[in-house]
Amino acid sequence: MGGAVSAGEDNDELIDNLKEAHYIRSDLVERAFRAIDRADYYLEEYRDSAYKDLAWRHGNLHLSAPCIYSEVMEALDLQPGLSFLNLGSGTGYLSTMVGLILGPFGVNHGVELHADVVDYAYQKFDYFIKTSDSFDKFEFCEPTFVVGNCLEIPPESRQYDRVYCGAGVQKEYENYMKNLLKVGGILVLPLEEKLTKITRTGQSSWETKKIIAVTFAPLVQPKQNVNGRPRSVPLPIFEVRTLQDLSRIAIRHTLRQPIAMGEGRTKRRVSFPGARAMHRYGPRFERRRFCRRFYRQCVNSVVLHDSMIPTAMDDCNYPGGVEEEEVEEEEEEEISCGRVREDLPEEDEEGCGGTEEEKSRIGCARAEPPVNILREKILRLPLPEPLKMYLLYYREK
Image 1 (tube, rainbow, N blue to C red):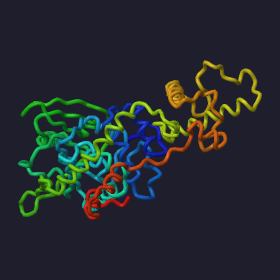
Image 2: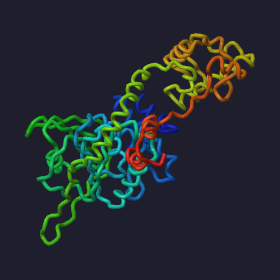
Image 3: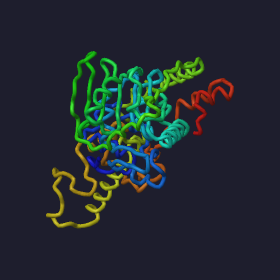
Image 4: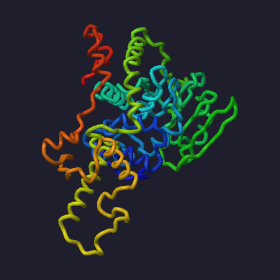
């Protein structure tokens, strides 16, 4: 299942494509998708396929297509502090994205049939915490996984605000899934080959909405009971956080606040030297800029037949054509930097043109990699080194 959007060359371009196709519609879901590189959840030899809008399976490992995860995340309507249950949690990719939204006081549980997949999910989760700078931009709800068949959860188990099932649910198990949900909660599951959103509006009342057609492998039926005793898969325990954890959460939250405020002020408009190199389209914008530069060079250096030259008001019919919105954004950025398009020297392959003096004058310089401000603040605190490492989650970067 998948293939609804074109393939991307990196994670950001994949998310751009999902946004353009309206699979990702909210800023919160977009931030979560951009924070986690989908390729990190693939085996190394299959990473080249990570940015295609296709499902991936290898042995017991499985990832749904990005367009499906997008619809699931939007339908769940996640908010900080909610409880979430992922039935068929797999590699943990979805659970980790959900944890970025739930925050430190949410609940993030998963049930997975295969023990080797649970081990793989924990490995990927640890890798994300220790190596990804995105982790420091969020207050995180760590997922907890258990091994077992999700159809063997005891009926007296605690209910959740949000539930997702990652396997095709047979009609006879619909009520079983509904009973895992609190009043006011949302259940998203593949039901009768339709991704379905069910909202519990009362003790015995429900609202059902069909989202898109999907094809999922069906739920694995429970095995026969042993010695006549019913099997049981206990859900993870709701643990109270330790004082150490609460202190770490509070300190990181306090240090993060000025960072978040600064991001909010600059989110809508970037107007500083080198802004073009940090355009929000990233690699995609760089490619389009190269195509525009190539086109201008061809027009300036080659005498073309009149019928071959597009008119000034036509759309740009050259490779990597530019949308009007992008052209307007470029003009705004150049004006805000004190530059006029006609006065700029032609850019070279590195994105800046002219002599060193001219580069300095117009402030055209490649943007440096972003600094992890939260990490830098923690390292500057007058604290013992072990405590700093604890605040940093013993991260490798």
